[in-house]
Image (tube, rainbow, N blue to C red; front, side, top):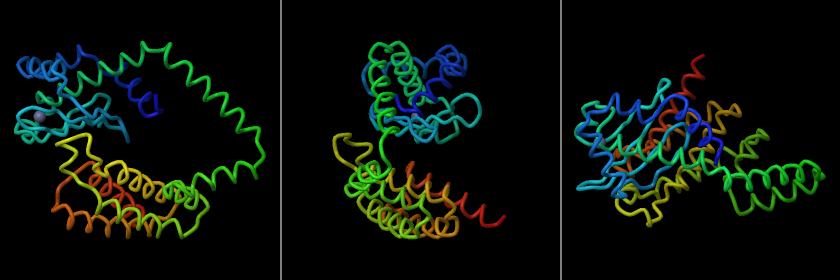
Length: 253
Ligand SMILES: [Zn+2]
């Protein structure tokens, strides 16, 4: 389980249960939500950057997000109810149910989860004992095939090259991104993962103090995004807008 997943699982099990969902959900929609889950209509369930996303299929497919603005989650969905501000439409309920199911599977799947954790501890211990020169060589080799990793290390080192690399990666990823594929067919590589990683790199740059550059790049890439995807909003454009907002807010201090 990834750290984010583990954290969210802990939050969900502590703060939110199926009983809580039953208490807030419309019974008819709850029934429909359960049917989506049993019919296997909840796909692409993912947790990242403090939210859970999934696509719920049916007559139309909807991308649903669960967010934690306070202690407990609320749903965001593009269906008519969701658009009217209903946090628990049938789709959001379906995603919450699928998510709670997966969280409890993970909690009880300790036997399977134990081994990787032990291996991870052993590998960490091994790496800690290695010479810096050897570790550097390994990292540089890995970064040769992975520009995002290169960019993250360059950002940590305070190198301006990280900014231009990030801008290029974002521009390419935005142009290659196919938002419609996210809804239609999960087997198509829609470029979402590539875009998500490039956006995460921009976030890293902000953490490493490249505030002015990040504000500029975020604005530029948001323009490119809107021109390319006709103002279609996705988790990526939302994250970019959040990063732009944070950077500008920091600049005004
Ligand atoms: Zn909905």
